[in-house]
Image 1 (cartoon, rainbow, N blue to C red):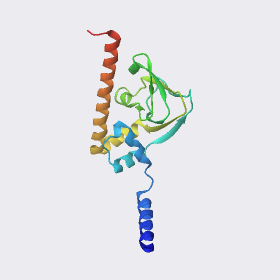
Image 2 (image 1 turned 90 degrees about the vertical axis):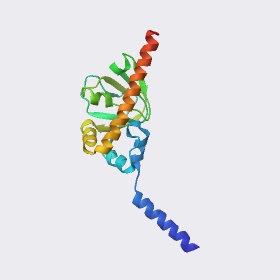
Image 3 (image 1 turned 90 degrees about the horizontal axis):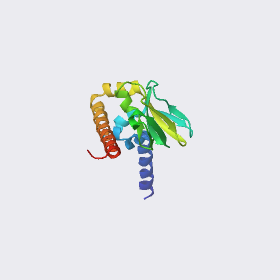
Image 4 (image 1 turned 135 degrees about the horizontal axis):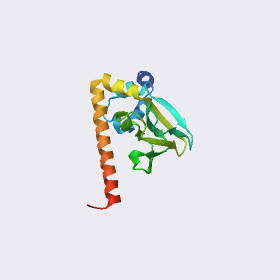
Length: 168
């Protein structure tokens, strides 16, 4: 009995060692990475950098070059600019910002500031594009997810405009 228990403990220890840290699993919360395998998530996670912002800190400003895409790990961002129809909106944990601009003009179409202590995962535009282009199967998954998210965003804007302007 004692040997069985020791063997089980040893096997669990070895499994933990082989499994290693699985910090990359945090990427599963973002719809853009839906359907990626653990291996794919781990590969792309290596390119992310964690950035911390205090309440009131400017994350980026409209008109500046898009250098990184941000994924909100914790906290909230207030975003204002063209995609918000001249208003502003709050982005929360599990949301991201920069993908639309990445595929448009590579210039920020919005400004963003932290409304509370926030931790953002940042990946450079070029790293993300190289990853998508260099790993075709994974890249297609990310692009399909991005198109799905973009479609939802377009319909959300259409609904907002319809509500503001009344039925035709």
